[in-house]
Length: 232
Image 1: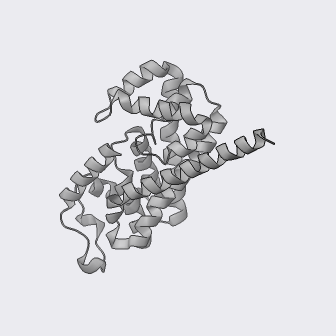
Image 2 (image 1 turned 90 degrees about the vertical axis):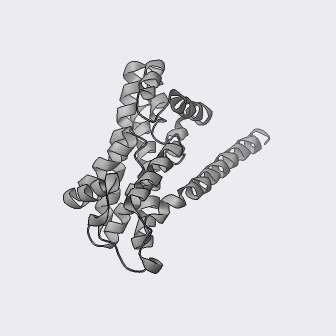
Image 3 (image 1 turned 30 degrees about the vertical axis):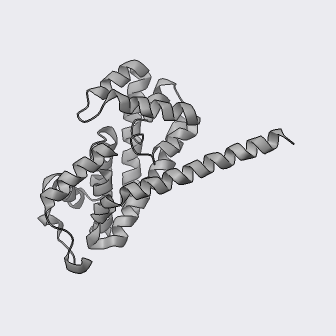
């Protein structure tokens, strides 16, 4: 998450200024610069396919900030520049394809070599792969679902899944469900905030905390059920 926030802050500085006065009006995406401007142009030009391409890139190259790009897609939906169903489907498909890249890499190279390969990606470290592996070991296959909602784990949880040869069907199912939830939250936030879509990035950490809290509650509830079952 820290890498993504740092990149997002740089992008917002390039764009200059805040939203429209009082949050009221709209802003033409042609005024955006840097990576965000490129992403907006791609989404407008290619439609939903452009969203899928960018999401694929974000999954394979985590420093690309989904917390900025997907709310922007939501804003464009509100401006009738993109279709809501197509954007959600394309974003989720892009996330799955990106996850399969890391899954295949780890399945072919093994955990250690895949870890070193991740360390060669700009702005990423081998410790990022270690964090994802630890998450996977603690939570099992369900970690592929919950990992899509956890900062620093979202993309790289595919590595331990691939290294352990997790059944591909289960991997794809959990990846689709987790990615669908996360992408829908960001796209929906951008749609609701309209011209203030950039504010989603400011509060993405709060969103992470809420999601992680929900995951902890779910895991705790499962543990309680198992304990009660063993004492019956």
